[in-house]
Length: 208
Image 1: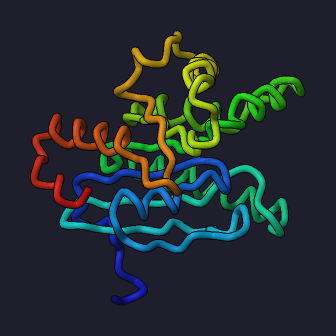
Image 2: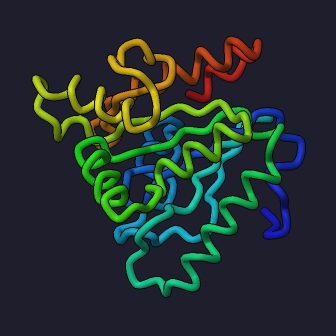
């Protein structure tokens, strides 16, 4: 494959995966597609989009935002700008965004930002995607680390932080509690298939 090849050419349906560094985006894509993608051992190791294409559908693993281990602040800002530019330039082609969050710590991290009177970067990204009218699904990862009896409360708090009214179960077409490393991604796969069906693209089911 030539390095200059643009995988977005001729794409009619792109799904981007966004999220903080080290929330499990690459692991999730590997589970969703069955394709091996580079998985970073350190937060922020992926600095460029990683893409997988099937027919005219493209899956793009965007670089993680937020803390990037061993990466200078200036470089982090460049990466953030690249993420924003890629998404803005892809409006129309990008039909769906999967924002991956770390379920067990999401609310804690958001509270920490808000305590400094700063807009949490996760919330900023979610609002940015919604402003661009990109269909956005929230994959709440690592739910295997949350006690079963506490899961509904955790998901309700996440929904609340994203500006939606609890209970979370009224948003099952938007919120997908998963555990990528455990291979439990059925809620997300169901939502992706719903979206493909709505676009009359059942032919793409075989890739998920």
